[in-house]
Image 1 (tube, rainbow, N blue to C red):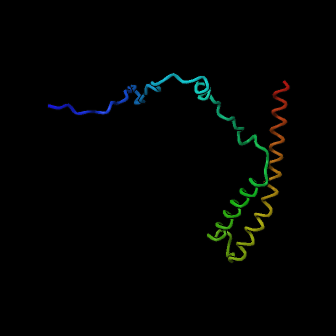
Image 2: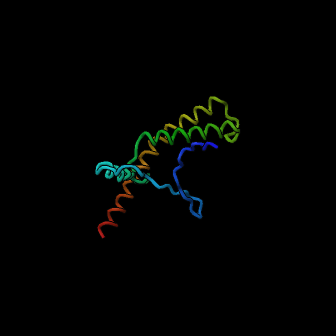
Image 3: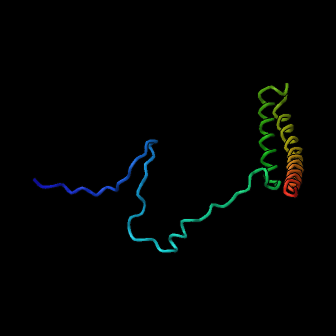
Length: 122
């Protein structure tokens, strides 16, 4: 009886937790450049609360708030507002929220910076 030719399978073993560990590279040895290339450090991102205030973020936040207010007025929580009044109310809220949000973010960022300076100077 003729034998069937099977493709050789790479061996791996599983752990008790269900993780599968593979053997990794088994061919030629990597060059020094290839070995060093795998040890790249991930870029360090600063936390969101440490970022500087930006007008773009303030505009996005104000737009979301204005849409939320528009939805509330259309659901009837704003009394008997007409469509025009709801649009006007949301537009005015947007116009107020953009600078208010930017300057509030700037104030909070400066405050956190002062607190961090106090902590590092001790």
